[in-house]
Length: 139
Length: 117
Image (cartoon, rainbow over all chains, first blue to last red; front, side):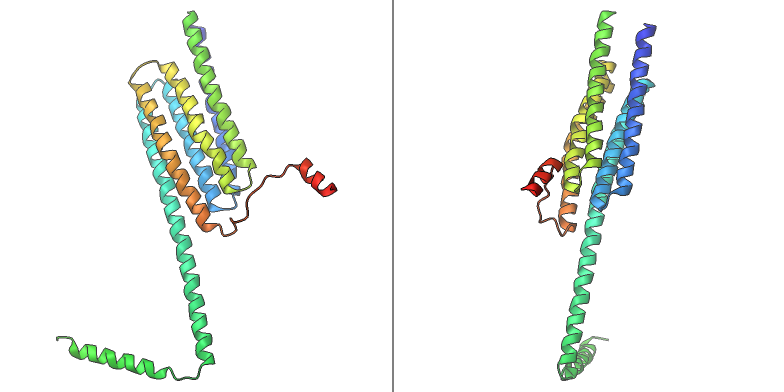
């Protein structure tokens, strides 16, 4: 009975050690990864391996509550990946929008420089419209 | 006594199979060149790796509430991992502008043959 207990302990310890080494390798990839998607993939894999380590520990230490922690860790890791993807998609779209806006402004400036300055009266009409609106507004 | 050892052997086999899958997944993530190829390797660790590791742990625990919860972890992972994979691939496909060229893995020998011809 003593021998089989030692065998189980050795097996679980070896599993945790191998998983720790794998986490280090995947962390290296998350630092090296050239694009943001590579980093997110590596972080997701680190989360998977940490969940495995917590599950192994729950058997090794004979603590039941660690399984619940394992479940909650899985939920939060999934949520983190989804939120990171959403955030970086938003950042990319915002950058694209900004670039498009700058290009439109430059186009407008070149167009205005090429054209004769006839467009000045448009501003006047806008101002007149604003004045009319102000007059219409109930005080 | 012999049954105990048989149970130990089966659970050790499951655990080591899961570890082999995880090692392959990390190897693939470190070796492949593009993010979508890397996702292919990482998904294997997310599904098969965690399945075998947790099956081994369930064999060790026997039938109890804990092994039920561990099976719940597998269930959650198998539903959540494709969703997160889809999100990551959509992010990559949206932000990578030169994704149009198809990624091909060339072997060195074939490349040399092509050069000789």
